[in-house]
Length: 461
Image 1 (spheres, one colour):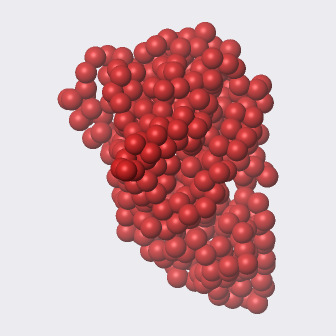
Image 2 (image 1 turned 180 degrees about the vertical axis):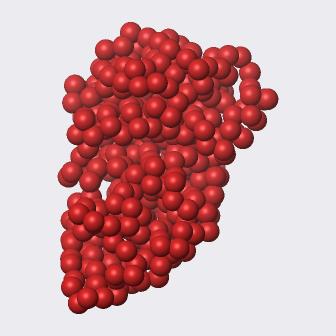
């Protein structure tokens, strides 16, 4: 007797009860209900942080190239390019805005998976929400859904998937974006499952791109792919209905070895949004504990290379893996160099957006400070910890330890701090009056009747 009918029946059952089906039901249910108030508020904060980052990158040279191509190939005017007056089709809008929100390395982070949660998710959700004239409550739900999907998948795949060289924000952001887009389109469970499958077969992105503009392109492309997946599913294009868990599906190909049951445990009742960090510094999040330590020691006066004998830093091993280049060759590389970021914090007493933008990576004083640094990986440290000791030529020494970096869930940015960050970024694109009004609208996202009205704050140039 052939085993094919049995296999077919087994797969059909899986498509109704497996991981993909559970996530699809979660998507569909979210479109018809409202988030718990505390989660909706966090979704608004995440949205505000994303919008600020997108506005801050409006003059980025690489973003201009992406916009130029998107204009040339784009279709109907359906959704905004954040920070500009023009509108393009939703797929290309998602591409451009996903790129822009990540371009400054100032976007949010889920530290346990190293995923930038809002990058692709908000870009996809906002594009379709604008086209659909969706409510802020629906957009907030879509954002929460997308983040939940990508981060839950990330917990099952990390660190093996990341260590194999995949850019996890891009690969899993594709599915998060599809989940968010499907929520905005109010897809039924069956169609949402196909959207996840269409997204899964597009998932990609290489870590070798992290020190060049294709880092942000990875995220923009994930947003576009997720948007396209939801649109195709809504048009009745089918995919594997169990694409996440089936043999040769996403988890199988990307190497998940454990934690699969946790992907759907508590789905819809517990959320990972409280774990999301909002960066106070526009650089790799693994560097942030070291920056905090440097700023603490330099708050009274700047540290000069001629006064220093040696700077010793103990960091989590992943810091040297991801940010271990002593003398970066490019400005993007500087955002992924613990040496450069520490030198900025010590000498310029800042590691904010202006410091990274205005300081030449080849500045002799910064280069001299980097030469005096000894950075050691300490496997006993958690990712949020750092130890710093500076020995001065006059015999003095100072120390500073950090156990939880600023911006982390343990030390979250207050609304005032988030507002200050937002205004610094947004006023690169719009005046302070529009920026302040936009920030308040973002925080009150769940109360907006039509998110398409948000564009009035940036389409003023």
